[in-house]
Image 1 (cartoon, rainbow, N blue to C red):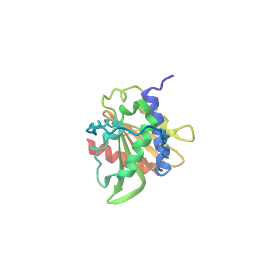
Image 2: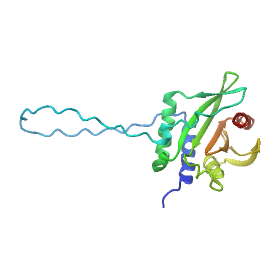
Image 3: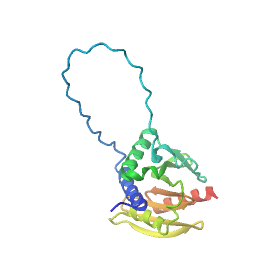
Image 4: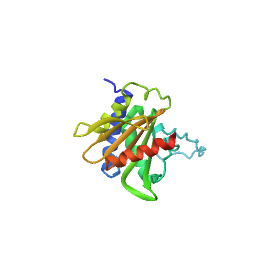
Length: 208
């Protein structure tokens, strides 16, 4: 049975969160296979052909577009772009998790500071859908929340913040807050419920 975009997203989100908790470790690189040399007669010199320009493949949506580029947050919080190595590692993990659906979703990530001071363990992730059709599906936000809660002890509570429906997901390690912003899903991850709610409030306030 083929996975649906909603199911793939929940799976990808779950894998991403596990990846972040593991400290964004680098993935193992598969060794390349060296072909065995083939014996041949002494070649007859021939003119060297001009090199043919190669075509660089277009990057997938998840790595080509920074979905968090237009995200704003109200004072006293600030959003800070991740370093290139960390962002590339996260995008690679999401591409692997989403498989064929990686051309549907685009992602963006920001760390959070307060009055210029880093908030340890705090991250904002934006998942963007070009058509917005997926996010309009009934129960879509709850599916994303279910993917973050996983099969363990995570609990989900639905609430509203500034009239926006928000799912709060509490696990043993982090507290996530997820809400819809037009065609995007915004997920806040912090170590504490109060902090997650405060950052969501500042994000929604800045967008209005």
